[in-house]
Length: 277
Ligand SMILES: [Fe+2]
Image (cartoon, rainbow, N blue to C red; front, side, top):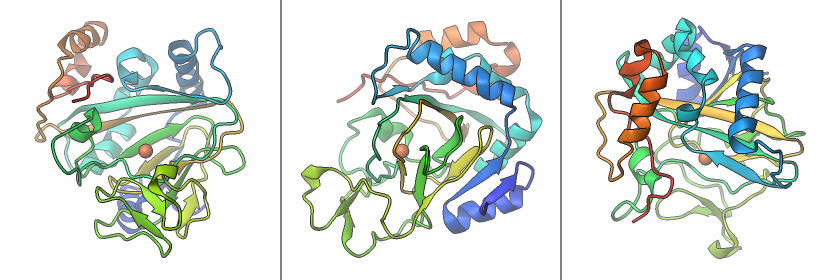
């Protein structure tokens, strides 16, 4: 596998993110933690196993529910890597999420998570949170990632701020989505893997998939019950004013977690999934 690195190979990881806009870090979590996270995602997102197929279920504040994910913050290798990725030791939780997908979920539309090109006032919580040069993706694809089963594909080198869509495609003015020129934008973002530069990411359960703030990506077609989760950290020097109040949720989080983790909530905004202007 190319573009995969040991978790202590910080130089290789940073170089790959800088050059290609993505990479895979091998075996960051144990098989036991993989299973614990999958069990929790089932527990919080589909406790009765009634989610139809195909479907996707998102938990946009996963770290506020999960117990297992907090084991990461007692792992010095993981923390060292995350500090290197944002260039700072003094970090807070930025956001977290989990996704459960059932078989038959098709390829998604090519997009970037970054909202820094947003024109006009914020419309959505992502407009507040997804505008910084910190890796957008730091995800555990708990089934691994492979085009035969599903996972994530990225467009290599699409993380450059002046990246242009390949011939025959264009970006919307906010640079969030990729459209095919000969299809109307009402048909949605392009949702096939044959776009020039597309790379299906191949990883194993326990690997961490990283991609840069701007990198265009898509979920591949899902052929099995799939679990993923991730979290973003940001330097505390980046302060964010948000219009929602989640102080009760943050207080509850602090109440259930040991004091050694409380510094991670200095600056944590949480998010209100229902907030819109
Ligand atoms: Fe995304």
